[in-house]
Structure formats: structure tokens, C-alpha cells
Length: 243
Image (cartoon, rainbow, N blue to C red):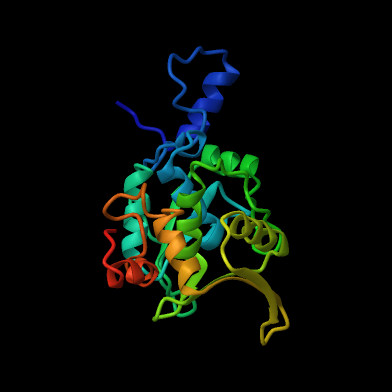
């Protein structure tokens, strides 16, 4: 038996040129190297809303490949994301300038679904607040806080930072609808870039997020930032309420 040094693609081109019918579509592209549920962002759920919120704050869409990236200092969150998306746990190489753990998910379909939602590459300055149904909005907000939120250790003040004025205004409108004490402030980074902070202020507002708005009602045992949950819910414990 003789062997050729032709690649799969070259063999496919020869077969196609000679009108050979293929029974399987194995030559339509590169086989998937890593698994993922490609329908994940097609089906709305509390888990999907939470992961969407994480992606809005800490995710990037590649401008050159069919991949998306989640970056998180808390690597446990990346493991939870991979679990819920049925994705292989593949991290980007860590280098001298890139030390934050980053989960890579390769999928043309997922990238397309995110574009339909309004999330594209270079989104940080232009992203709009997505249309999330009221029922799933608490889970989305929980993720936004998990991603870009800061909570004072005493639990009286919190803010969420974004580079998008449109997203900040959408978040501000949600907090107003929830009757939280809120405001937007504008600052400039050392590099001269404009950032916006959306605030929640006062014990009553912080407690309302956890007790009345119940941003933790539909989470499981792992899909939340542990430290931030402790700070947001500390007044429920001190006041003797059940979580």
C-alpha cells in the first residue's frame, strides 16, 4: 500500500474536482477541537443571564477568529462558566503581560448569537444595555456586579464601572426602577479615557438588592462571587434575616 503526503483539504479538492459524492460532511472545515453547547445563548434562563452579564463585563469577542474569551481573576468563576456551557476548560497561555486567567471558547455560532444580542469585538466603549426580561434581570445584574462591581467592606456603598455611557445609563435606569438610591459619576483614567460609575448607596439600597430584588434567589451553589455576596448580604445576617 502506498501513502500520499496530501492533506485532508487537498484530498477533498481532488474528490470534488472529479465529482465524487461524499457521504459525510467531514471535509467542510476543521473538526471541532473543544466541545461547547453552541445553543447556550439561544435559550434564556437565569444561568444564561448570569453568564451573559459576566461576558458583558469581563468578556471579549475576537476580531480575527471565531472565539470568545472570559477573563476573571477568580479562576473558580471560569470553571463554573465552562461547566454551565458544557465547554472544555481551555485557558489562554499566561505571559508576562497577560496574567489574568482567561477561558477560551471557540464557536462561530456563539459569536453570531452574541452579535445578535449586540455584543461585538471592541465592545467596551459602545455596548448598550441588553434587553433582558424582568424575570431574568436580577441574575444578569448579579453577574454585572460579580464582574465589574465594587462593594464597600461595610456594605453601605457599591458601584459598577463601565467605559460605555449607554450601558451606564441603562444600568442606572434599572436601579431607579428598583427604587435604589443611585447616581452616575464620570471620571478620567490616567490615560485620559472616560469611565462611568453607577452607584448604589445606603444600607437600605444594598439590602434591597439581596432581600427584595433577590439577585441571589435563582443562583445555585457556585454561580456567584463569594466575597461580593458576603458583603452584599451581610446586613441580612446582622439583622437576623435568612439568606
